[in-house]
Image: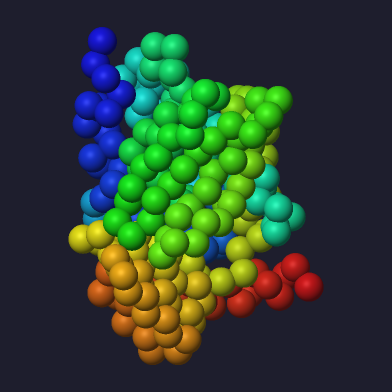
Length: 242
């Protein structure tokens, strides 16, 4: 049986950025038609350099691992500072479980263990998943000597219908353009006009629309026309919710 880390799909997943512009562009569709299926995610990545958000990328993980004969399922996480939950995937291989979370750029399987924490180094960020008690786990990040809890979870599968219902609801919680990825061990994060570039021993921060546009085009191949369309759709969508 092939080891889970040897599955070629994960090398593909690492190349797909986290970005919600491709999701914002779907706001012009009726709610049931908004989710992007796995084929659309892959084809738009090849043709438009798009990525995806946690829902579309988790769905891609589930479909791709199913082809490999690997059991995988969506899991709901509790981010305590947010009202809307976060979602990631758990894959099972042999008797082991692995966390895969493209929303936090954990695109390599990270083993979930009760007896000891598991660590994954990704550029300037180290991820740690550890058992708390009663089957509850937490995901931590370690950056620059600082530790931060990202979320807690139970490793329980979420059924497909519930996952899709949350997916459709998530379109009503988009408030800004968001993008993140690792390039050459450099972590790049953009939220609206805020830009953070983190590397080993160094961090740069900017808060300016020109900087945000520059980094979105340079590192995410999102041009001015695409971004303009996304911002307009986002403004219209906000208006329909007020």
